[in-house]
Length: 477
Image (cartoon, rainbow, N blue to C red; front, side):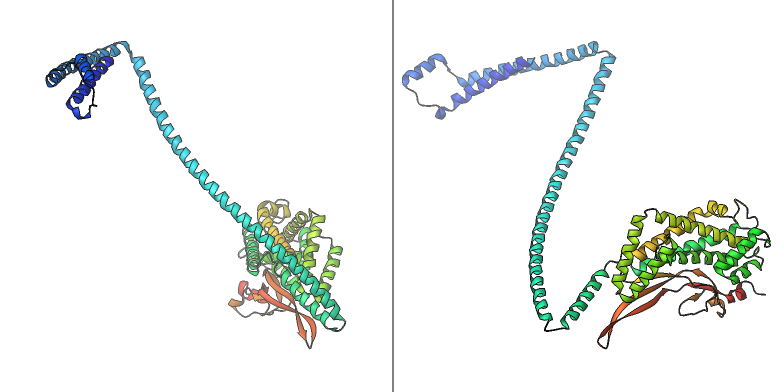
């Protein structure tokens, strides 16, 4: 069917070419008479218009026949394909078409992905190119800085040699140079604080919140009654009196806390706060007592005689190297601090009349450990972190965690009464319920031409205390 159509089209094209060749005599080249005679002999055309008309009619007839044949072949082909293609083959063809469509869709997606990757690759190359340029500029800058430093070193050597020559004629020049060097060192060393004062205050605030939550939860879960006279209660009373004072023992053992255990909660707060403050007051937590006392004396003497940056640097290096030599000292000190908290808290609950202080009850260390182990671990972790920061990572000043001792007089300039808003503050201190922060800075000053050192003390957060007057508001009689 297709070759026949091609043949008819080819004959139509040939006839058309001959027609235009005959109708345009100006485009035909000039021939000799002999050639014209030969051409007339080969293709004699007497009437080209009539011939073209006949050929067009013949071509129309052939085209009509071709269209009829093509339509007939198409109908026969459809019937044959319908007869020869069973339903299974038709289903296979449909699946093949669907698979072809899916393949084309996937190919489109892959082409888009390829274009995206090419664009990403181009951008990455541009970024790397810009980074290489920055590195080259940085290398050039470092080279210039190094050459400048070498030039400055040569000038410093020349100035030092000149100063050494002038020292004999100017005795005070060496002293002035030492003072200038000292001030430069102080400025340099005071810029190494890892924590700011605000961060230290926030850590102390979080620690006080953890202590308050533990004290309130332990008091809420405990059932109180009359104080026992067993050996365990007597020993707990004696230990609590030596730690927190006789006033605390008298308040806890002489009252019924079954209705309102607020005094027991205050005692637990003071117990944990005092425990943390005493642990942070040493030179290095967990270090043997005798060695720690020697290091404390050395540091105190150096703090009084040397500038603040010098003593702070020595303390930081000593503290750091102690932990390097004893890598398990931090874990040991944290465990010891937690056990001390369990023991002190259990004794307070026993003195207050906690019902049942056997193994597993709240009046025992095991009971407190099983119920409040996570809270105590958070408290000890915060305390150990504060010890590391205040002793190793702050050089410009000295932060001290403050808790007032029992029996000290009340000074409103250095502390805050927890129940001061309810009435007049009177009496001595019973315990500290919230820790405070004190900042000590050793500064140099010049008096009458001589250099001297003075210590500046600032109370950043006053500790909160409970006085004897608390009984007037909590348990009036």
